Length: 387
Ligand SMILES: *Cc1c(COP(=O)(O)O)cnc(C)c1O
Image (cartoon, rainbow, N blue to C red; front, side, top):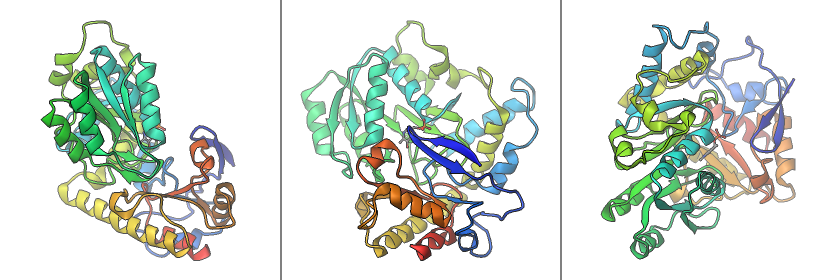
């Protein structure tokens, strides 16, 4: 048993999986969920990070290490960047070492270097975090806030942009993971364009689960460890070097978060652990073509619908309405008579890891079930058959 720290303050005990112990691929035959349910030795991961990792990704992770300056590594590194770029409509991706928070720090650092002011949109925990990150980099943005479970109100955004010409950029979270709400990114970019303002967006839990087009976005962040179904440890920031160069000040830039330099580099600037790159490359294989992307998004959309109906059948109501929900995660209050911690423990006893103990969920008595990783309907049914 290995105790693992997940999120700010959750400690879950993960039982290391025995290699011979079952396959959990999308194409997995048989009711893997049912087969594994109740076996304490192998919990099924329905967390929004770490996510359930596919066998092909695990196999890539344990391949021999490669020197990050060697001939073999650069093509691999660049291929992952190309793949990241292709899934969002072609915007180039800077690949950095770190988790999603690092990607958002790099966005904040890039904005801070131009010394302009902006507007942060907040409708959940991760909106609050990007505001803290902006402030951490010396920015003092305006803010708009909505209740948990709400989307961005674009009419209010419009009124704010009209009233405050000093706002040069708007930064928000595309899929607010804490609530499960998917915000209207095309609506925001259309609006910002009409006012000649730029949009930055946290896509940590959206890219890889729903179609995302970043054509009209200035900067966007993502990570290997959530919606793309790999291990945490690589962060990426999308942007066009020429657009960043046009607004960036000439002052010194902290090296690790220098998005412009990372975009311009052909290969890694600093040490990159090759297992993380190989694993992300393998995780992106199912997203490599238009067709396979469509299949992956359809899988998540259908499974998400199924998950929401399962949650309703046990008498619970998803926090996000169907019309504004991202399919890959559902946040809800546990069934009557159970608090979040008790519900999480019950699922754990049945052999499933679900979220509910991070401070921001526990304090609202909410839990979350996520299907971002390598999860199929048998896994979901395996849990709800018991509940
Ligand atoms: C998880 C998450 C983050 C932070 O990512 P870490 O990998 O935990 O650093 C940021 N934004 C969103 C939307 C997230 O879901």
